Length: 306
Image (cartoon, rainbow, N blue to C red; front, top):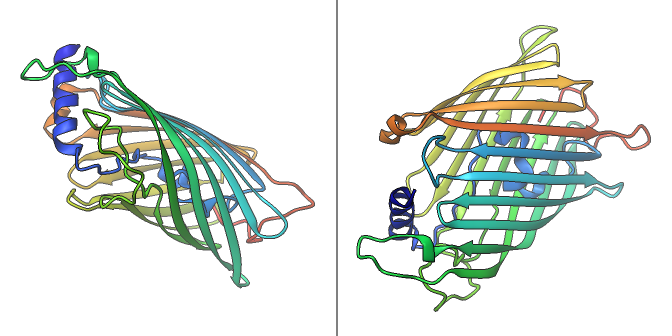
């Protein structure tokens, strides 16, 4: 186990001391959107509750594990509100994020809406350095702390497509440091920027084609691009394939019950050299939507599936 901690943590500290914000990456991002874009809060349903668990690179000790809980809702005056908890584990590091989202949605036409969102909160982190090993057998004390978080986003959507831009974490994070000195809550030079786009094409009365993409940009890190193609059958069964550039291919499937409950699963196969040392990544999701007859959608059209 400690040998794996050497691989994961020493490389982690060597590469990520530039304070690049490592926002968790999801295969089923299109149904976990409010985690990366606060402007999405309230866009999907009157109240939407989501649970997601991700185990990456199964079979390798100390690799990423992520669990998320989120709830978001809308009000009569075009204000959306959301709350999320994201627990991220990577090697010796445990990081739990608590965030509140606020969005405001403008009516731009009969079938289009533009939302602005902000995110704020804090993270508790524990870095168990005392049980790790380094090539020089250096000893480090455990690090425990709290750091603030803030983010922003835009989300434009219509009855059959959406487009989003966001930066969910803009402050420096100390969680990858080897000591607790020289940290201040300032805007980071290495923020994650996300661009998302999705479309719905009606093939026939029962089949809809749903391509989407997510692009993640961080200064001094390779560009991450997800390309996804899903088919929705009879508004009940969805399945598709995804490709993450120079990283992985994925298969996903979901069952939609009574248009309220979505149970989804995805499997990622790694295309990098690490692929020979693990049995892939698994992600499972539960999404529950509540719509109330007296309220109605901000975009009153049933063909919007995001």
